[in-house]
Image (cartoon, rainbow, N blue to C red):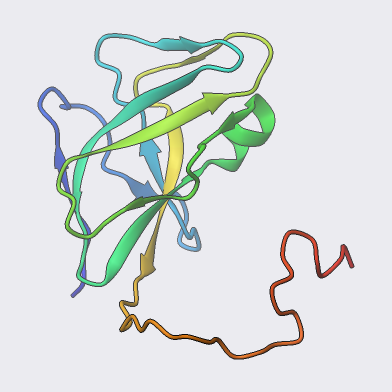
Length: 149
């Protein structure tokens, strides 16, 4: 059986292990580990927030750290490197970078669900340097070159 292993960091005695909120959820909720008390964000602030857990992923997987839709849409939080990638060989604490776009100060408390993690398969393919790439109808067009519709 393939499994995701979580290990509590020192001082994390009370947070629930990251889990899927429903049977059909793609992502598991990640909590804020704030043993020294809540933190308040002002407009434009970026803070690194610990989840209180280290992780061991199965081979050929990654953990994608993504915003929680409610925190993003209702309160204005984004994860600037979204989706953040936790590699399968990383064993440190999972940290979430939260950037606040809201206008009024907003407080995150210990145990608040701050992000979600989606486990995805990873393919490692051979890398080949070539002199020419194949042609396509789109070619080198990017950043809106295919239109809005």
